[in-house]
Image (cartoon, helix red, strand yellow):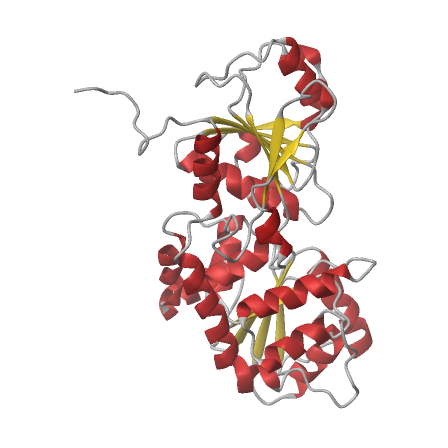
Amino acid sequence: MSTAQTPSTPAPLLWDIFCRVIDNFGDLGVCWRLSADLARRGHRVRLWVDDASALQWMAPGALQGAWPGVQVLRWEQSLLPQSLAHLVPADVWIEGFGCEIAPEFIAARAHSTWAPGPNGLNFPVWINLEYLSAEAYVERAHALPSPVMQGPAKGHTKYFFYPGFTRGTGGLLREPGLVAALQRWDDADAKRRWLAEHGVDWTDEFLVALFCYEPLALNALLQQWAAQPSRTRLLVSAGRATQAVQTALTTLGPLSPDSPLQITYLPPLSQTEFDQLLRCCDLNFVRGEDSLVRAIWAGKPLVWHIYPQDDDAHHAKLMAFLGALQAPPSLVQFHRLWNGVETLASEGNLAEWLPADLDAWRSAVQNLRDQLLQMDDLTTQLIEFVQKKR
């Protein structure tokens, strides 16, 4: 019987993924998840990154080569002829979020007369992996070619690849079996053990995960939680969220031991632990791109703190997402206040919406999740796209 590869069982590929860390490590978080997911599916990945320090807590062992199939390399190595002279040519190049591959790296491939990669491809499939958005332009721009007009790759083509929420886009990162695996934390005993292992003495309070920048409405929300009769346990992510909460408390004053609001500051969590945290909580405040996607898969009510831009372009992006979510009016209004689109009036009460409208918020997230589960995930679509272009 023939052992040749068939279209249904394509040969594993070698991928070069390039990432520049702008701030907050969101770019690295997405690029690492993609790298790890490709490796789990039998591919080999070289992740070129200018600041890999966050992988120490995001993916323990990654910098030591403990993740089979993924090799983390310093961005500077992509500039050095001595590092590139014997580099095995890749089948795929991915520029994460518009970061440009170093001309030296491209020239090294050009000067080797575009030596074939391990699967005989004379030039890699070249992809610019874009940021996530629900805006209408995404479907129009997804998978469009962009001819290279200058430099050593002149005459070749790169392609724009857009993640998204509709079938006309590249979908979202979702490892096989992820949603089913997260259901383990629905069991109250398993949830309690997980929380205890992470320093949380949970006594059945309303659990809230907080991963944010510096929302203007944070002070009001903390004050309102502390004044309401029901108990809330706020689990605050390390970094800017912790700093924002501690800054707020310098104004509001320390919480008493019997306050209805109790706060736990979490250490940096690995990506796997962060996913589990979102499934354990009753409400998730998330920020940026990677954690938004993970909150959707968790299927719990969510509030998104979108990355702010000076020209307020993020407002349109936020509203486009809320449209895709089919968010109920209270969730739209909460997002507008949380993201500074509107100013919180003195009589406004953010906290009162949470128990009153939480079921509707949860339904919106779960409905979107169920729709997305009917689509191919981002990694599957990338692999299929590359195979077609080869």
